[in-house]
Length: 336
Figure: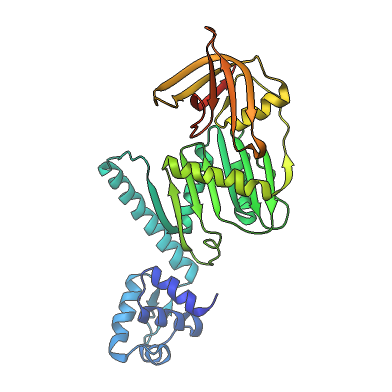
């Protein structure tokens, strides 16, 4: 690391310019008198005693008892460990007090802009942890590797991984693809949370993103990113891993496209399903039970639907997310 970058980080810890100069001079040169320290660090002579006193208060230096009195730097590991302990204690107290004051506010259709890598990674971690039925991730290979352990712990959700780069992609999803050319970072968790960042947002070496990332809870935007993921990105990747699984009932589907795949693979026409969603025309809640009477899948899999027949002989065409041509927009389908 360059000294210039180190100086910036030290200022982030609460030191001012003169304190940074003085402490760096001491750890390079060893114990110095106040006059020597002022001359070597280029701290103005009238300010040097204030700087020394401030560094002593903050735990960075001590002074000798001998004459002439010298300023002695405290070992960096000792002083930083003490600072870490102090800050962690303060953060814990502040967090506890803020939690007592916090009143949760429920929001819908929100988009949050973040510019911190730490915040972005916290949201990715949250998406992985909360994924219940489906998780789609398109990200640089290095980021997939970073979250490998968390992804391996997820057993139930259908996980699709699309990695950008070269190398061996961890086998942490039902289907894993790779492509050398980068594109945006996209994470879609169920139909609840989406994450988007331009492809170059993670290219900085610091803690800030280059530009921004979006945290999305707006259903219309989530749908658009889902379409982009599966109809623009997904076909361009090379499949490096696909896990064949046995059909275990009951099985819950968030994406009708995956149900159609299983219908074709396991010959499920005639099987019983439960559909939860909305009637397309009236937007009223739909809760139907019936047997699969047929299915449809367009070229390119842009449109997928199933036809179910209820016990009273009524037939309904059931589509997926944002259906407009079918009778029912399914939010969840349970194969019984």
